[in-house]
Amino acid sequence: MGLSFYIYERSKLGGVIGGGLQLFFSYFKDLVGREVTVELKNDLAIRGTLHSVDQYLNIKLENTRVVDQDKYPHMLSVRNCFIRGSVVRYVQLPPEAVDIELLHDATRREARGG
Amino acid sequence: MSWAGPDEVFLSTSLASYLDKKLLVLLRDGRKLMGLLRSFDQFANVVLEGACERVIVGDLYSDIPLGLYIIRGENVVLIGELDLEKDELPPHMTRVSVEEIKGAQKAEREATDLKGSMRKRMEFLDYD
Image (cartoon, rainbow over all chains, first blue to last red; front, side):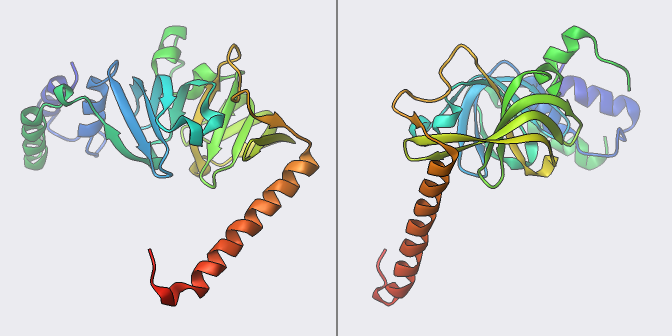
């Protein structure tokens, strides 16, 4: 499943599902269970296990800890959290989780229209 | 839309698994609201029952009671589930009254304003 499954679905259905680019949604779905660091637009950086993602790239993290704990004491007792996709600046991923070839390929297919 | 089963609720990114739990909601302006999640939608508009704002100034903090709040989703940064087992704040922080925290907040704001205006006046020195 995941990205490769998504590519298959796209070619099967002729390229128009929901009319949007769903590539990164599929990509993030593949990363579920991995340890990631999410940096927000307000400079808060949170590390945790990726629990789930949705179409808006809202993110749910588990076993979270804030990178700069002293600066954000109110986050001390937060173990699980939901982050609104619109406030995310970066998602730092483990290097071994990134397959550039697969992404590149998927992007080309997308550009060709499925 | 069909109703998700109990397993799906916990696997999905929806806020359903946070319903009726005590949450910390971080807003875009830096405010921290706490309360029980009673309702939400796909925009992350949320309804908090028994909401209060947690104001932290240095090592002092206070909870200002607000009541029932509907928060527009665009203002939401993060929604965190509070672990009731753990201490909410580090032990060195002390709880003070609403009046005290408002005073401390005002003093802090005035101090930053002063710093800003001093900086502006000294700008010709071109320091970093």
